[in-house]
Image (cartoon, rainbow, N blue to C red; front, top):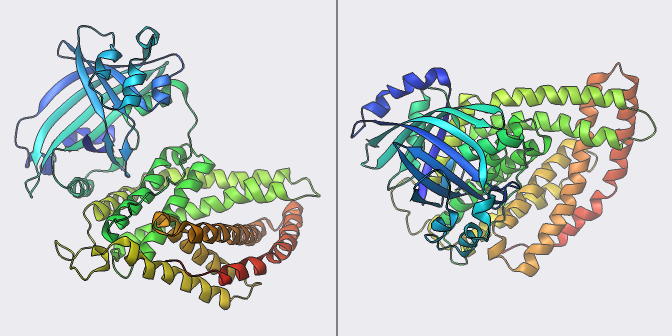
Length: 498
């Protein structure tokens, strides 16, 4: 299993990167250059790619090598994948030969399926100039540094390649992020979320992006609290970063799911704040990213949900204006995600989680809640989220939109906390609690959308359509608020978790 950190490098910065002292001064050997030609094979219906596999045949210095890889299991930016390879006599792949190396029955069966070799055909290729050299980090860890430049060719479409890859030979992967952060101070870098294979398939079909929802969190019964924090945090980061390609293509649902991942991450960090506080600069950058995503999402909801629900008038022109505002903000998001601050944030968060940088010393004190089994240590944190929710419900004026929004935030944090530790909670207790919080969130979310719509619609004060819509959503908010009291009372009656 290889562990890699991949970063995009703009073409004008490639020469400067090759000469950067952080890479040249720590080199333990001379660089080696290869001219590589890769051909990716699949069936006409792309059965390998749809099954989470890629099959590549590489020509390198007169040799032919076939490689199969699994889809990356990754945190943000850090890729871990299964990889198997074998020599060939020519460019035609022999998948059954690879299958003999693979312990996974599912993968082996796919590669030796009857007739697969006959159905394989080239789907795209790339030509790459690869420079590789070993570097030794100050703590003694060995990293293979690879710089790839070249072009992808797929179905008449081309894409430039400019990638810097760090492959960890052994040790703590947190050091990869420290190295990348140090480089980024001088050279603009971006997180490379897609492999060359993923980019090739995207070029081949200009395939639509798939928004990525949160993956279910499975915690072992005896997991320590520190391990749970790391595992859950990386799960949230994975959701955020997996949706970046969709956000760059201005996909509305991808932006929504990236924002959900960010909200989950902030809820986790808030939950652990007393025992694992996040450094203030990273916290500030998280707030910055939240603000950028939220502004875009508000116009998406107005144009895509709120206005279409309004009856009694033709509001097509108003919707067009709202969509125009949303599209402008989506274009601005492209620049946000390409800012050095965004790349720095993702690298810092990965370094914080992988390096367990909440520790003030190398080993946790035995008295630390983080050193304790999560099953017991989670209880005070879960109850902290519940107490906050109950306090906000108790003091709520249900006609006060900002106060309702604060209850909504508290309900989300309590729900996310219960979902994070679902496997360690009694199912009969956790499931109804989460379901009831979902009901409350749905009502409060709709009320918040209506309140935001009132603010946004006032920006079109000279529009008769907007004034009609404003009156409609104001009345709808009054009607929707009538559902809220009973839902909140049901939450108040539920027992504390843990």
